Image (tube, rainbow, N blue to C red; front, side, top):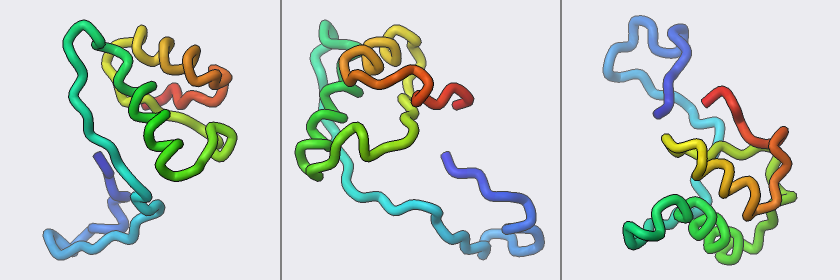
Length: 90
């Protein structure tokens, strides 16, 4: 979800056009079997990194959009990311 600053849309209604701060480089959608619940972010991240040629070190901060803390912990451990580099305010 992207939320604009009130000043960006005040008085513009539905015609407000906002400029993006980032570009979508690639994406991945994949179903996992129920007994593999929780490994999706690791699987997807590895695939995306391989597809783009990027490395974990190319990123400053990570946000794992997941409701269960165990999934985030698994992601951090498996990807070798320092916990300080995981966005904690999301």
